Structure formats: structure tokens, C-alpha cells
Image: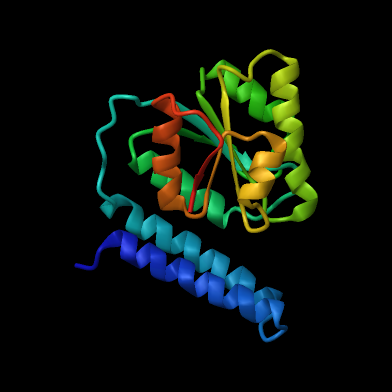
Length: 189
């Protein structure tokens, strides 16, 4: 009988606590891997109980982790929330190339590409994606949102992304605002 979003938020809080313990060398990689598996299992159990939102937009959003990044817990949370929010979500998973993002967005008439990066080394592919969209003349028709642990509002502005949200729940609000025509960058914290 518990609220599904509250359950997810508790799982996220647990992951954040474990991440801090890892940073302080009080937890180790096996614990992080187990926590990731537990969070995936939690999402599968809770997802059917999340309230569906009717959306007249029903826009397609392509999401994935930047090339070189294999951390998809946050990505999957965002994909789930967007799907529940009424969007058609294509989740490309981890280690996604710039070309794959663009190819998938073009072939599915996607309005937004969401790129997650937990590693600072893969964050530069977010910048590369925006430059490539500009070069191909697609920047006006495809919005780009960014997120992930090291991603900040300053980085979002620096690379010219259309938006950033601090949480998966806020990503739904961010996408709705972009699709309503609000100019970016939109920072939702």
C-alpha cells in the first residue's frame, strides 16, 4: 500500500548513501554492484504501480548513457519516469555513440535526446552530440537534455544543452516544458 514513488525515492536515497560510503572507502565495488542489481529489481516490481499520466504530446524521447559509460541505474529511473509520464521512450542503454543517438532520433522522429553520464570522461560526448546536431542542421528540431552524477547546470549551459534536471521525477517536468516551447536551457533543481 506504499506510494510507488516514495519506494523508488527510498531506493535512490540508499544508493546515494552507499555511493558516499564508496567515496569514503567504507564500501567496495561488490556492494555497489549488488545495490545496482537490487535497484533494477525494485524498479521492475514497482513500475506497474506507478500512476500513468495521460499526455496529449506522446512525444518520442531517446535516452542513453554516453559512450564509455556503463552506469545505467539513473538512466533507467529517468526512462521509467518519462514512460509513466506519457512519453514514448527509446532506451538505448549504456555506452551509446553519438551516431547511434542521432540515427535513432532521426528514424523515430524523436523530439528530445537525453544523455546520461556518470563518468567525467564520458561527459564530453554530451558536448560532441550537440556539436554534431548543429553540424547536421538538426539542432532546432531535436532538444538535448543532460544528466548524471558529475553533470551540473553550469556544464549544461557551457555545452549549450536545452535542459538539466536533478532527479528523474523532474526530468518529466523538464521535457514537458521543452515540448511546450519554453526556451532553454531549462534547469530544474
